[in-house]
Image (tube, helix red, strand yellow):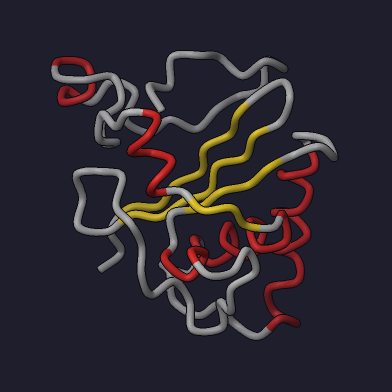
Length: 143
C-alpha cells in the first residue's frame, strides 16, 4: 500500500496524489494507516471474484446501490476484465463488514459498513492477490 512498485506489465497506473505533501513528507502509505500484517489481516475478509467485481462497480456509485443490473452490465463487464488481468488463480479481499460472514454478501443496498484502513471517516476497497502481483483498488469517504 506504499505504492512504490511499478505495474509489472508496464501499464499506466492511476495515482492521483503521488505528489501529495502528506504522502511524501509523513508516510509513503498515506492515506492508508501503517498497519502490521496481522492488523491488516483482521481488517480484510475473503470475497469471491464476482463480489470483487460488484464492489468495483459500487465504488463508481459512491457506495450507494448501483442502478439496476441492465444499466450496470457494461461496468460489471469492465470490472471482470480488470480482474481477469490477474489470471485465474486469484484471491480477493475486502474490508466491508458484510464480508465477515459471507464471501458473497448482498450488495443491493450498497456498502453500509467497513473496517477502516485509512485515516478517513470512510473507506472500502478490494485487494486482489495472484501468484505474481497484488492489486489494490480503494474508495474514500463518500459520506
